[in-house]
Each structure stands twice: as structure tokens, then as C-alpha cells.
Length: 141
Ligand code: FES
Image (cartoon, rainbow, N blue to C red; front, side, top):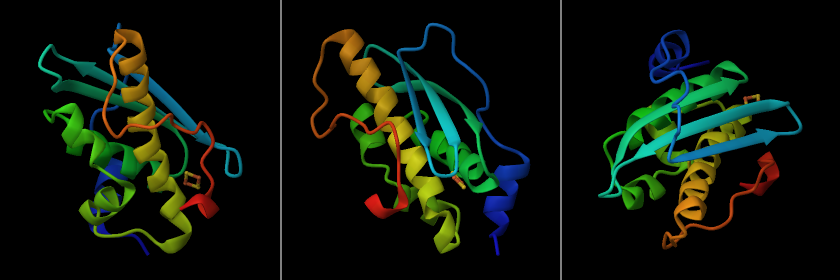
């Protein structure tokens, strides 16, 4: 049912933890399954994501997508990170079962929420970034 990559990132997730005094923190949840994901970003003066950590209280697919999403945005610019969608994350994991697609949406939205927090704190506008939803539903795909 799950690809080797999903199993790898689930059993050995990368970038788990918190960043103290993070540049931006984003928390999103899905009220239906009750899963919650939080992403911390450390962004340098050149708008490059120097470090990223996550904490996910959720299913295995949510943990695997958080882990892969953090790997994909680490070292990237804000604009590059914005281009990472749940589809990018799913592709990088060699796919997810259809009932688990909403789990990957959490990862995309958590990144956006953390970028939104960063932009708000620094009083800047990030082109293409819209105010994130705090509750993600499958039917909003
Ligand atoms: Fe809800 Fe996976 S079941 S995030």
C-alpha cells in the first residue's frame, strides 16, 4: 500500500523537532482526522531557508509527507519553497494512496502558514502567498 520512500520517511523522519526563535511557525490541522502539523522555519537575510523542523501529531502518511516536505524546502529560497505543492511532495514519495492525499495537503499548508507568519512578523509581502487555511479538508483539493 505504501511506497518504500513513504515507509522510510515514516520510520526515520528527517528534521523532527523545533527551532527556537524561528523566523516563522505554521500550524495546520484537519478537523476530520484530528491530525496536526507544525513547521518551523529559520530564514536568513537572503530569504533562504537555512533550517526547518517539524512536529506532526498524525498518521504515518502525515509524518512521511512532513519529513519529505522539510527535505524539499531546506536550503531553498522562499519563492522556491512556495512552489512546493502537495503533488511535489507526493511525487517525491513515489505516491500516496488516494485516501491519504489530504495528509500531504497538510504539509503544503503548514509551509504556507509558516511563510505567512514570517512575512507578517517582518512586515513583507511574499508574492503568490495567500493567507493559509487553518483547517484542511479533502474536498478542498
Ligand atoms: Fe489525517 Fe493523515 S489521516 S493527516
